[in-house]
Length: 335
Image (cartoon, rainbow, N blue to C red):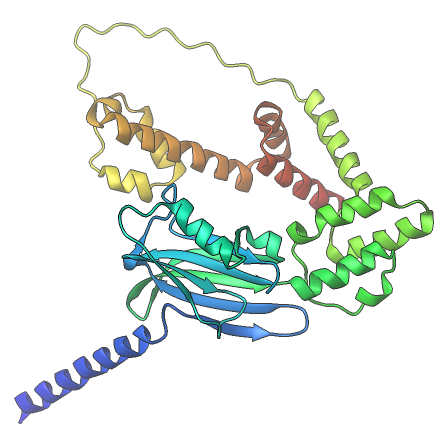
């Protein structure tokens, strides 16, 4: 009886797993509405990534936009087909283009242009996107999250264009800076009166956006601080005495995969400093670790670096990420 009960339980478990997977297969490779209101529409899709092939320059997805339909879409390459999924209109039929090994990407793009879809970016469609690798109910997928801010963007653009902050005072949904900052700066520069600039400052506060004057002031402060911080002088290297019988260099027991994917910055820094590391790895492996080391070093500086160190780094690299972090720290200090 016990054996029969165990066997029955196992069969029920297996059938349940099979049912879950069948249900999941019916939910992937389609766009679904997450939420929708007067300000923003949120869409989500899970695409089975094991079927995806590169489209161009190793890219496995590209965005296209139809201005007439106001439709942002994503192009995927599956087996012998190129498929265009509408991201703004989940109920719309997907557009399929047959292809073979000799089919060039330019032919696919021309076919889409005939349907009035042009290569684009989410920002040009008043949207933001998030793409990530995810497992959906056991299936390896490419997650695509899309938020359409076109309605909200139009409201803010109208307020900015007419120099009237009243219509947007009740709005609570935040509009991403990337969708409005250039438009705001254009009209702030064109403002001819203190009253107009005053209205734009109210809008900027609502958007949590700096005015051109505030940005310029902060940049001048950064430049002034940078002049005060002396350049870092590399310490002279100590002369190393030659040993008659040098010790055999030690090689870390951890695998290359660990250092390439999981090791912290300090662990990787120590590993690369070991004399035996270069000889134990191939040229490509060592170059890959150096690249990751550089990335982790930048992340560490952005997350933990002081204002002075960030300014010193910005003086050398001029990286926008350093500038953005400097402005954030200065804002925190002011608050």
